[in-house]
Every structure is written in structure tokens, then in C-alpha cells.
Amino acid sequence: MRRFTVLILLLLNSDLVVAQNAKIQRVNPTNWWVGMKNPNLQLLVYGPNAGTLTYTVTYPGVKLVKAHTVENSNYAFLDLTIAPTAKPGTLQLVGKRGAQTLTQPFELKARDKSPKGQGVTAADFIYLIMPDRFANGDPSNDKFADMADPNVDRGNPFYRHGGDLAGAGQHLDYLKDLGVTAIWFTPLLENDQPLTNEGGAMRSAYHGYGFTDHYAIDRRMGGNEAYKAYVKKAHSAGLKVVQDAVYNHVGINHWILKDLPMKSWLHQWPTYTNTSYKYQPITDPHGAESDRRVTLDGWFVPFLPDLNQNNPFVANFLIQHALWSVENFGVDAWRVDTYMYNDQPFMNRCNQALLDEYPAIHIFGESWVNNVVDQAYYTRNKIDFPFKSNQPGGLDFVLYASMLEALKQKFSWDDGVNRFYQALAQDAVYQDPNKLVTFLDNHDTDRYLSVIGDDFEKYKIGLTWLLTTRGIPSMYYGTEILMKNFKDPSDAEVRRDFPGGFSGDKENKFETAGRSNRENEAYQFIRKLATYRRDNPVLHTGKLMQFLPQEGIYVYFRYNGSKTVMVATNTSDKEILLDSGRFAERISGFTSARNILTDQTIADLKAIKLPAKTALVLELIK
Image 1 (tube, rainbow, N blue to C red):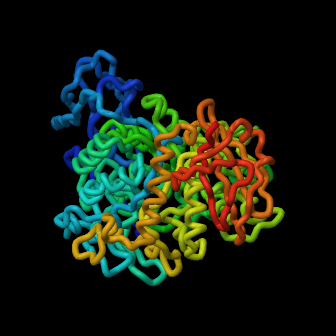
Image 2: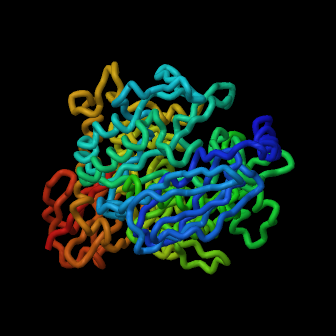
Image 3: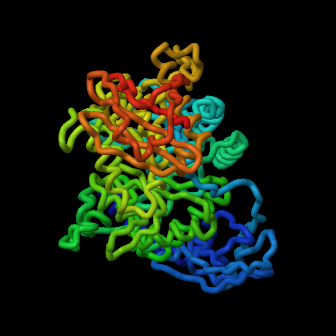
């Protein structure tokens, strides 16, 4: 809290520098483009006494509509309109105060035709990477003495390890071979954060969720040009890129927080107030407003100050950065961190700005809830909520939990595989459940293989479900080589380095020869399913029909006008002979099937041999 107090004092004392000459040190966005669908642009101009200048802009097709002054005289916010007739070039922001005249160049670029905002769909398979822990392609950018955290030490699980965009770019062929079609990185923006003391250990911001400059990719990742090069290389390989957005908060070292534009830039409290992390007050029709405010406006943690998105300048700053990122880097989709802690009308406005400019873009937020109603609230839904979200998708935490429960629990009336069945049975609440992103683990959870007791047969069942059920499948890095661990004693245990991504690694699991027989079996299993999914639209857009589980047996079908796929799961410990008569609605007219995992033919569908703890994926043949 001491640091937070200092920030407020800096704001209150900003009028002490009024007598100084003005300077312009920053303009955000750092550039813009002609030909954007929305002609409006708000520039944040910062520097000593930048808010005391009188601004003019003289450039064909560009009009300065209004200059806003705020509490802190070091800021000005300039509203521009850019006409469709405006040409690319460099305009001059001219600021005058008495005898002083400042001129600040600002570039308007031409939009290029490179892919951007392509979106991800159920035809995709997303691979989630924590870049610091994946691969180090450029050791020269591992650390910088002038950054708040100058440490890099692979021997310390809480420090940075040196992974970067150059390293990730060296393994695109690996991902493409696996059947991946989209890469999602945890955030790449600058996190010039000091070490924090958490649980008695000093920890770095290697995860990337504490932004300190919205317009700079972290130098330790390679910087802005490295990100542009990575996206271009990924697109050339036929792979999409998902950017991780954080709108709810920033890092305590963000440059704006060192000299706040106004007190209301942040949610501020008389004494430090943490969010309760409780989501129920947001949707509860009986809930107290005070509880709701703590959930939404409380800080996520003390070193991640909470942004006030009801402040129109904050909202514009965040929305314009989102648009700038898509246009500048060419990213295809957004994953939104801590979605439910954001002001939801702001999120609708931000989502709509992206969708208006890039109609195909997909947006899926993190709302970590445990029931379908609350999950539906944060996406387009069919429930009569007072507030209607326009978010196209979301991370499917409900299905995630149900799949793990299906694999961990013994079968009973409500338990075991009934959990998975029942979660899907509630899909009617969503406008389009196929836009939800499904997963078995991620960087914030225990690793999948450990949760299911290191059971390889169950491992294959869960991945079969992930890659054959509805939704957009996402897989955490290393799952394909059987990486495991629990978050206890720390998150670092589930964020270990990918073996082979770093100099001096004894094993290189990017290569077949570096993997054990079991690891290669896991890799090839996922590869087979992922490539089949990629090449067969029946698993993207085909309808889903599921049948009531019986005695641990769960069967569902994906089907369209040209193809039918049957997924039959035996979660019990005994082999059974599956009588297919119960599935006549979908199986009638088919006489045989091809097992897509083994390529073997099943000549008689009347009784299908289903081994214990096995999921069969059968393409039915007439």
C-alpha cells in the first residue's frame, strides 16, 4: 500500500510543475491508420505540462474536434476525426503556450492486406504457450540491467527463464505437424515489474499479466518487430495467432501509474480492498450492491491495480489499444483475462469495436465459474438476464470441470461420465456453444495428467472427448509429451520449461528421438485425432447427439449430410460388447465403420467390442 499512496501524492503535486516549459514525451496510440471504419481517434498526449498547451492539427482529412484537459496538467486527450479521404502520411500535433511552440509528429499509415482478425472456429485446435517457458531462441535478450527485474535463472522456478518469440518461431513446424492450427501466448506486452514477495518467495512477472506499457512488446520477448515477424511467419505456415488481453488491471509499474492522469483512472478505496473473487454477486438477483462492487472494483492483487473502465478516457485507451494490436501485429483472435471482473458494458463496447472493424475475429474470455447459468451470462445467451453480453465465445470452465470429474469419479446416477453428459445437456442456454473454447488444463490449473492420476488410458479418453465434442479445443503446451504436476507448492510447478527449448537441455522432446516410447505414443495419438478433426468438417460444424450414459458407457455422434462419426466411451474397468440397437436413430443405414485411430475396419456394427477405459472414434460406412 505504500507504493499506492506515493502514486496519489504524485498526482496531487503535479501542479507544482506548471511553471516549467512543456514537453511531449509520449503519444498513445503510437500511430494510426487511414481507412479504419471508425473515423474517431482519441490521442493520449503526455509530458511535463503537456495539458497546458493549446493544440492544433493541420492535415488534409484530419480534424481536431476537442482537446480535453484533466486533473493532471501533464496530460491532454485530443479527439480527432479521420475522414475516408485522408491519405497516409505524418501529421504534426502543434502545441502552443505563450511564446513556446511544440511540434510532435504522428504517423497515419496505410492499411496493408496481410491477414488479420481471421478468428478461430471449431475447425481450429489452439495450442497455449507460456513463452518464457517454451523455447529460448535469442539469449541476448534474456535480461536487461535497466529493467525493474534484471534476473534470469532457470534454476529458480520463480524467475524468468529466457523463452522468447524467436524460440517459439523455431518450432512452428512441430506444432503444425501435431495438427495445431492456432497459437495462443500468455501476454507478451512489457511487464517491467519488480519482483514481488508471494508466500515468502520472490517472484517475477514471467507470466506476463502485469502490463507496464501497452504499446511495447517486452524486450525479453524480442520487442514489437519480433512479434510482427512471428505472426507473419505463423500465417505463412497456415497458423493463426491469439493475443491475450488484460483490460481489468495493469502492473504496479505501469508508466501511467507513476503520474496518474486523474484519481478516477483507477478504482480507489479508502483502504486497500481486494476483490472477493466471488462471481455470484454479479448475477445474483438478490445480491447486495456492496458485494458486487467489491467483486468488480476490488483489486485482483496489490501489485495489479484495478482500472476504472467507467472513466471514458480509460475505456478509449483500452479499446484503441485492442484495435491497434490487431491492425499492427495482425493477430486473429482475443482471449480476455479475468473477463468477469471487468465492467460488462465496457466489455460489450470493446467487443463491438473489434467486431465492427474485424467481423471474423473471435473473442473468448476467462470467467472461472462452476455452473452453466453464470458461464452463459458472459457470452451471447438465451437467458433473460437484465444485462446481455455480446461476447461471441468464452472459455468453457464448466465443461473442463465436468470432463475431469467424468474421469476421476466412479459412475453413478449423477457422477462419473454423467457429469460430462449433463454439462452438454445444458447447451441450450448459449446462442452458439460451438464458439466456446474447451480445454483440459491451462497455466492456472493442475496439469491434466496429474489430475487423472497419471493414468494413460484416461489421458487418451479425455483428449478424445476434447478433440471430438463441440467447441474450439485448446491444449496446454507439453500435454502432448505427458508433462504433469500440481500447482502445490506453486504455479511454477505447472509452468516448467519445455524440454529441448533451451540451450543445455539433456533431452529434446521436439524431436521423436528425444521422446520416450510412451511420450511418442501420446504425441502420435493427439496428432492422429487433431489432423482428423482438421480435415473433417463433421467435427467442426456437424451436429452433436448424445445418449444417456449407462453403466459408465457414454456414446455420442457428430454428423452432417455427408458423414457420421460415432464416439463410444467405456469408462469402466471391464471390457463390454456394445449393443448398438439403442443408437438406431443415428446408426441406422450404416453397415460398418473405420476406427480412425487404428485405421481398422469394424465389419459388424450390431455388437461393438469396447475395451475397458477406452474411447473409440468410428467413422460410419454405409
